[in-house]
Amino acid sequence: MSLINLLNTAGIPTKMMLISTRQNGLPKTSHPVMIDFNYILAKTNINGETYLLDATDNYIPFGSLPFRTLNHYGRVMDFKNDSSWEKIIPKHGSREAVIGEIKFDPTTKKTNGTLSIVNSGYRGISKHQEKNEINEEEYINKLEESISEGFVITDYLFDEEKNTPLKTQELITFELEDSFKEKMVYLNPFLVKFFKKNPFLSENRNFPVDFGYKRRYTYIINIEIPIGYIVHELPNNKNIKFGDNYGLLRFSAQQNSNNIALSFDLSLNETHLEAENYSALKELFKYVTSIQNNSLLVLKKE
Image 1 (cartoon, one colour):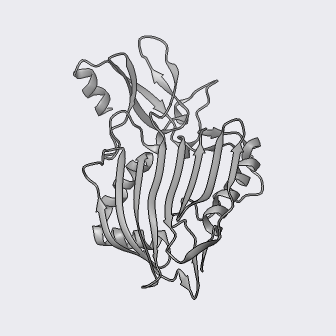
Image 2 (cartoon, one colour):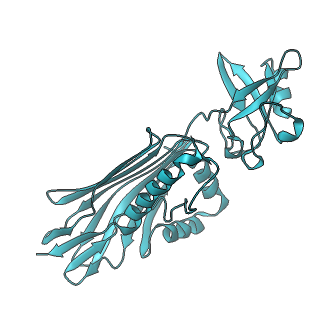
């Protein structure tokens, strides 16, 4: 209410919008009652553009809403005219992008490389919060544990110059142990896994799946083949389209001279999926987790 009063006092006409948070369920549109609602947003119009605002989270920039409030619609209260329903449409989605390179050193038997990890939209917001809750040493240790077994960060930069309230960029230099096995090199190229386990394990689902906002996950790695080694095995390419443009998974691993280019891209283009689409969604994520967990690159010494 304070935000609404402040905006009105400043000469910016603002109305109260009653909503129900995601955990509270949806209010009935046919006959709304006060007990259906448990949260208040501010609805205003600035220079011809409508904004839904919330001032309860320091990490949420202007024009964005906390994830808990992304629940389809709310009731705009107009005490002079009729109240009305208003859709809650996220101003942005979320994207996680990892771009890097991997090199093998047959002399030292070490694997090293660099990663650039960019999080934007809602993932950028949560990354800012995650980063600020602990000190940098604790954060780096946590990051090493979450990425891969034997993964050691030798240099780390949280790029403040490129960061915004909706975006973070991390630059990582790393070493990786135990890739060399006698005359062979074995590596799962997915050092960063977006989904280690399938989040959809139930056999059936009777309710819709609601992501809240659109999501995209990108992983691009260039792998240098060391002198004296040849490619013995590459992961299989995979392309899967989910529904009527609901989602798309594209994965490829291609050799080009002494380099291997690996690309993974998962787009979830709908925020809300009916229960009838659950089986197809579950199948899509079966491939997503399988590709990340089971892909194997094998190099052989000539």
